[in-house]
Image 1 (tube, rainbow, N blue to C red):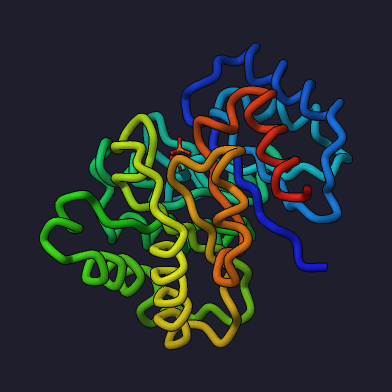
Image 2: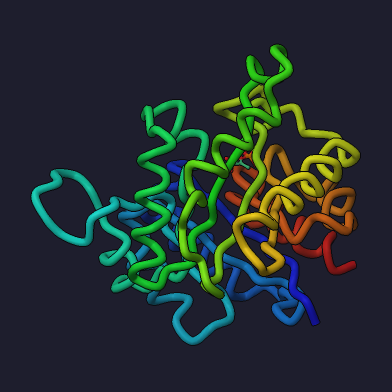
Length: 250
Ligand code: PEP
């Protein structure tokens, strides 16, 4: 059975203890892991401790951001290699908060994507247009550019990776938190899949992210073009996250 991806991006919402408490609470919940591929993205500092809790369970772990070199004189950076060694099997690459708050360029995103492939971490490439792009009619232009900069002349072979479509304006906290309509998501996802055909012979999973919660999640995951969701704030409490996972499998 094809699983629905549910990626829980805890961002910097939870401190060390809160991360461990939430993870241990989630482990006690009845979650349908046969139907859901759940990946938790804790803060970098909490990841190793959360890893001890999820070891030998169906939960996977991911990094929220990676440096593009494995080791070296890069103060404050944490590489894909180090995350891999700490137990992460996925990494977000090019999240809009990295692009627009921390100034990551398309060229940085490409290097991070390649760094993940090199060490065998599954990258989750986040793409999305800003409100200004939308106002200027540049949605497709932005997405095309973000995809081209990562995939142009990249030999992907059968290496697994995911794409998360996250309109910046739809993200809660850093964006305006206006969830994209399902009809709009369907259109954009179909376009992304079509666009990806020139870069990969495989059917690349495309997830939606932006103010997803237990009330709207079914309207997205029931769409043929949506392979899962990337969830920020609604993944950071036990009640909101379990309600969301239950809604998908109900
Ligand atoms: C995100 O930042 O990836 C995200 C989807 O956040 P939220 O669900 O809080 O809008």
